[in-house]
Length: 341
Ligand SMILES: [Mg+2]
View 1 (cartoon, rainbow, N blue to C red):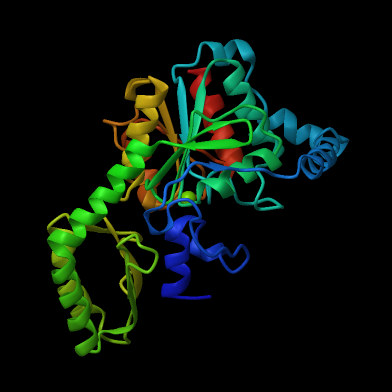
View 2 (spheres, rainbow, N blue to C red):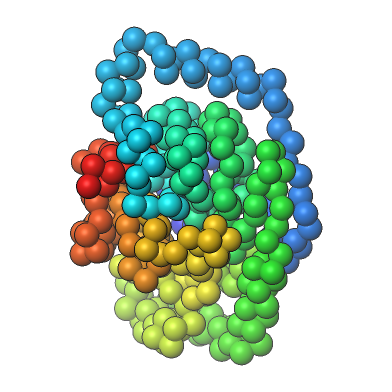
């Protein structure tokens, strides 16, 4: 599972391409082919309880006490005075990573989300993951509180959650479907001719367009043809029609329609939560989070130590916090710093 196929699957709504070989899924169940029916997620409650009980035992075991003391510095009184009232976070490489099982939050992070909620701070996701997978992850991690919203597939889908049920934000999802139609109507022929040219010039080893109905262009450059390939593709970026999923990767990359981004998801979350950018904290790690790290969208920014240099740069330039710890522990560390003032 390398190259174009894995990138596409990741963008279609699950997780980072580099971990797809471990965690494989087929497609976004909720927005595939433009279908947006209300869906209900039912998971096995007994399995969840048993699993959570085992993890809770581990959490309370002695070897983990010192780690817990290091990571759970925040107090309820501190959270109640928090300058941010909404926490929006990415999954892969931010809330997830550096622990097993990968598809569950560390207990510290699950507990952290519930503590935020108990103090009146809302939380939501902005990720490539499909929303059904997100809810399973959240519940199997033992999180008891509800997100204000789950957004998935890089800003394409948004669902509210009540218990184990999810409800689509149809207006938002329909808007994305309309933008898809507009893109096809306005640029469909141009995109097709660009793909044909890339193939006829033998610039690509592999190329795919609209594989999952998301109008994503994914490709692997033919050896030595990178420069030629980018000369043909660059106008799509220069004209603001597409953006690169992994800027700087000349050999294997995906171009996403400009409207398919996490910044749009953040605006929707804020609208539904009734929270302003001045009271929003964003956490992410990769270049596909760049749309969220916008001072117009969030006053508070944080990233873990493992974040991409571009993200660290933008977080620092906006007076945000770059944690010393990795992944979820880094985010908890950053929040502690923020609360200390
Ligand atoms: Mg990430």
